[in-house]
Amino acid sequence: TFTITSKSKKEEEVLAFRGTIVRLMSLTHASALEEISGSMGDFPCIDTNGIDPDTLAHLHNCVDKYGFNKVEALLHIMQTTITNAQETGVLTVPPPILSRVYQTLSRGYVNLLNTKKITDTKFPFPFVNLISLLFMLESLLVPLMMASIVNHIVWAPICCFLSLFGLFALNLISGELENPFGVDPN
Image (tube, rainbow, N blue to C red; front, side, top):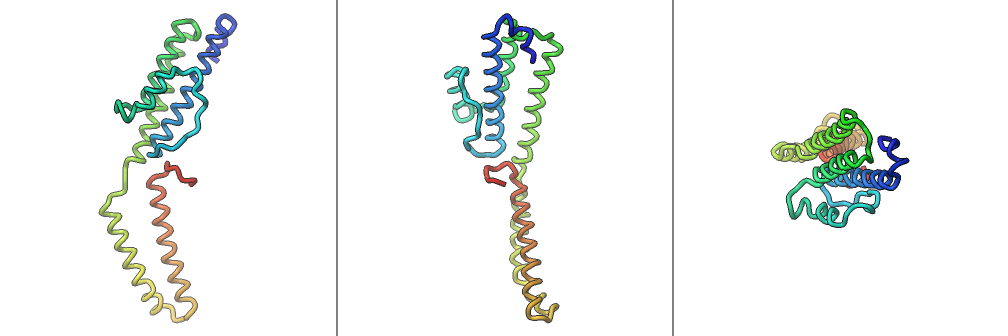
């Protein structure tokens, strides 16, 4: 909507700017999902028409070859594109209002970094070993305890199964919560 006042004067430039910004935002979103999921999956994005092939090659090599964060590079490209659009008259918005756009882009990146904290913080390995050991002990001791507490031949295995199943299910759920941004369906 910031380009409405310029559209009548520079219609081609405005449409090219809008398309470029939408495509860059789509690439940024896909790159952010790729970063937090920890995989190189194919995340959907709008086509890359209107984006320079050299820029796309640079973005492709960003992480592996140059050691840059791809999302940071895309944010820089978007900020540069917006600044150039304002200087050339494609965006005729006062700078204090346009600064809110930069602030929103920055807040999006801060939220990405906060999300990365969730994926980067792993459950401590000694606790994983302790839980595994306790599960093995529980698998051995619960059937013995149920057989001595419950004197019915049908109810003892049912109670044993339900208690062990519940604990193992909770463990599997906690493992899924440890990395909620994977590429699996749930």
